[in-house]
Amino acid sequence: MKKLIIEGKHELKGKVKIGGAKNSVVALIPAAMLTNGKCVIKNVPDISDVRLLIEMMKLLGSKIELKGDILYIDNKDSVNHEIDTHYASKMRASYYFMGVLLSKYGYAKISYPGGCTIGARPINFHVNGFKKLGAEVETTDDEKTYIISGKDLVGNDIFLDMASVGATINIMFASVKAKGITKIHNAAKEPEIVNIAEFLNSMGAKVSGAGTSEITIEGVNELHDGEIEVIPDRIEAGTYVIMGALLGNELVIEGIVKEHLDSLFNKLRDAGCNFKIEGNEVIISKTDHLNPVNVKTLVYPGFPTDLGQPMSTFLTQCDGDSVFEETIYENRMRHIKYLNEMGADIDLNDKIAVIHGKSNLVGKNVEATDLRAGAAMLVAGMIAEGHTEITNIEHILRGYENIVGKLSAVGADVKLVDE
Image (cartoon, rainbow, N blue to C red; front, top):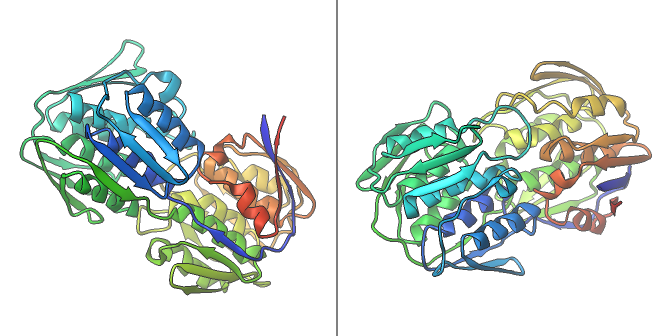
């Protein structure tokens, strides 16, 4: 069992470099399987989800190698293969192989995807999209494996009831070689969608409108070699920005795209935080007196659900009452009990937390119940008095590259212990 041990109250000074976006790379790697050619993906973060996807690509016959932060992929010997529960249960993004294998081979057999238990995460939007393109979708008797088939997919108008990132991407994958035109209405607008569309287009796909609510895909017969650079991870960046607002002394976060973080910056300005943005860097310092602010998670460009939990820790340090409301997932509040055990004063009612600040947090033994809850606990441990231990940190390692090394380099006292 791995755990993080933190001694709190250490000032953060120096520079943190942001890596490639987890939420982008976990779709870019499966996307490379759409071609029989060679692909190059740059700025790849060294996180456990990437290593697992490399294993899955090798299962599918891909020759794939990560050198530094560049991933080299050769699919000339690729084959179709079932993605069983051994792989699928370990990560949510395994479902991207549904659209990829359906598009490439006309058939996909994949166990139900796993990932963080942050609430109901149905894939019915994905399945309905595949059906709209002409695929047939069945499940095994235990309803734990999907069998998707469709040799001659045809473009169609697909309307999403919710602007789902996963469904938008999966439908893009399934439709790149479908006959005719596919239009995704109420598509997700996240920056990661644009990054993936650019990769598909580098391989010869015809995708337009990414980043808007309507994406158009004109089917092509074949795809060829492709290349892409992973965009910076806005969630990693936002987490370090939040840390800097509480502990920073001219802390520099390098490698950001300002527009991707506008919703966070707006809230920090409202709270009275001391920061400036220069090009692709944020320079941020601790502010002693923070104003209370209300945070409500929304689809992009609203406040990201993946930053809501770390932000709730920030709100415990504001002078007065703040409200944190989660609108995307119903189980994003399991970290609240641990914040209260550390000395926070939070009233929780379903998906709304009223946070009474300012609270002096004290180190405790806590758990990372999911990836972003783990980030919230890490922020809490760093601002708390004394010693904090976080267990179940495999969640954190799925999404934050070299987090101990990056934090230690700027003054934090964080250790990774493997018992």
